[in-house]
Length: 243
Ligand code: ATP
Image (cartoon, rainbow, N blue to C red; front, side, top):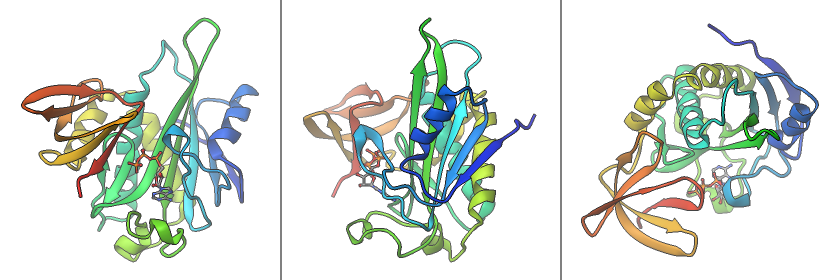
């Protein structure tokens, strides 16, 4: 079943997720999609800045869960897979990998970032969830300091997809995958980068090296350190390729 998308297009906004939150508070429906050509204050996790100049795709999608509080990690898993699959469907020459938990990578460089946020109802359930996704489309538009760590669809493939078609494809895929976390986990696991490799883990102030084993059924990252396995939960944890 294809869910209906109600798409709002903006030339510029501070943050598509901030804007959509306002719409959600005003009663916007499940499936409302905000797409902007530029964000002046795009955010990543832990309030980090997500550079959002013209030449990228910045979107936020509103989900209104029908029951209970959805697990944000599993929604992030669904969003990452939805975006990876939609990008490959649009530009078939690309192979998009996922770095736990919320980043899309091509050839070791970041193509897209994802941030899922929820608002709780007074009864304790989730009133709504906002899935924010930023994808670099055009080459040469990001600040110099990101040149080595970021890439774009144009840089990786030579193709420049229509932003609105790609936005719809990502949102439609997300709306259907959100109902099937088992399928999403399966596809996510197959795209994970760094599996079997050593990576730098940062947990708040602590930082250490561990071998990446995979992802558990709740979307937690399984790592091995000194022969002992432990599961890291989304939140304060960052993962970096070891230099
Ligand atoms: P990471 O491991 O990349 O820091 P993260 O999930 O902790 O992952 P996010 O919160 O998703 O990071 O995004 C913020 C970070 O992404 C910034 O600190 C910066 O390094 C990088 N970044 C910012 N803008 C872009 C962009 N347009 N494309 C790629 N990377 C970006």
